[in-house]
Length: 269
Image (cartoon, rainbow, N blue to C red; front, side, top):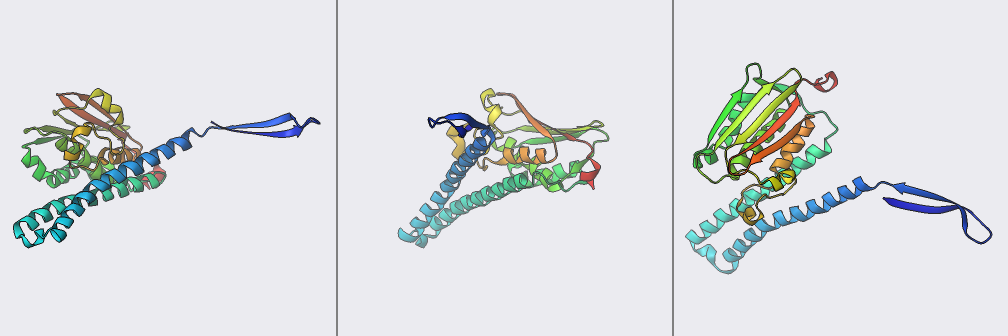
């Protein structure tokens, strides 16, 4: 609380006979400031790492004469491109988070689209990783639940990030990922689950935080930006929905999404 005290009426002795006391609840303001500071610190760290690597290789190419060695120069350029792509993805994810938050009070672009087609496109985009890990992805859609009403671009990102997250967090071959969808009169339920390494119970409350890493000791080995699940949560909230994560370490992880099946007339147009 922020406390503001001032005299309204003073006596002959210079003291206050009547005072005004105002207490302001600044919890939300302080929390927003903390989140802002954490975001700036984490974003700076995530940006610094690839930039340092790129600049280091550039110095080797320019100052140490590595540019004259075609094989070495090619290897350096491949590494630089990898980290340049990481920077581009990080900036794009940060812009997505900013857009979802700044447009939080605006209605999403609603359309009815085929859910299976959306998942198939995600699988196609991730096919190199799926094939490299010999992963199996199964799609199960209940009868009558073939379509989904929502912003197609946002749902592309939600499904892509959830499937990609399962792939990148599990190094073992033969991972099985399952995407399911079912509808009731009022609620659409979508679940993305896998039979991988799972998430420690202590980490579950924090996995939707920006840049949060379940295993910090291997953070640099992961290829994601640390913003994927934050984008997922924001995208679902934009559809007035919720997401919950459940996991049994060493056995399975499941993300369950619930969104309204139908929308109010003023939002659906």
